[in-house]
Length: 243
Image 1 (tube, rainbow, N blue to C red):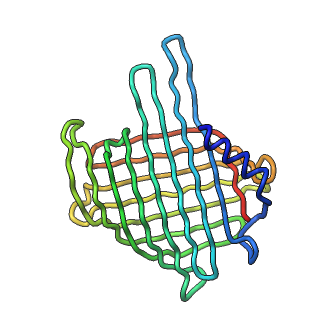
Image 2: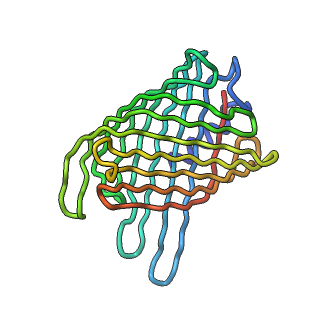
Image 3: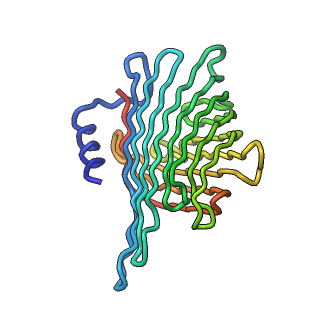
């Protein structure tokens, strides 16, 4: 938590603000930290949700990297210790709204019984809407996955599979200060559709001052093979800058 706060302060002090990518602003940094705490006489329930995203845009290429960490506990036990690291590249070649993508992703999740999970994939995407105030993107591709999971809360299993990866993302600006974002993946195994991964990440953002934002976030993840799912609802601050 101290690391993310220090990075946020550094960004506010040292980097000028811009509204979007331009010829001179080719980088984007997004830092968010949120959570929830409920304290009673029996103890405290708390959940922390922290993340960093960094993007670099060139003429026909965009590179995106992100890291997230969710940690939670109640008086009886640890509930979340979930970490993910992702990097993807978008290659624009033929049309402004169409691009190819490649993905590297790593996850370890206490709440979903994932010891380690690595994914590598390629695919295509299309912006059906791509305006300042509204955006709709749909992508599809194939993911190779290598995982080490806990089945039935007891057995450690190593397995690999190929998945189809369908993603839908939507953004809508509501006036000058409110932004609604939502997106999700459906990743069924090509061998067994009952072996699937389902995720959703939804945000309501209120612009406080320049790049500083108040962020309410809802996240849902389901791993059918481990028969685990989690639902995370947090609120906090986000700082987004172009430079």
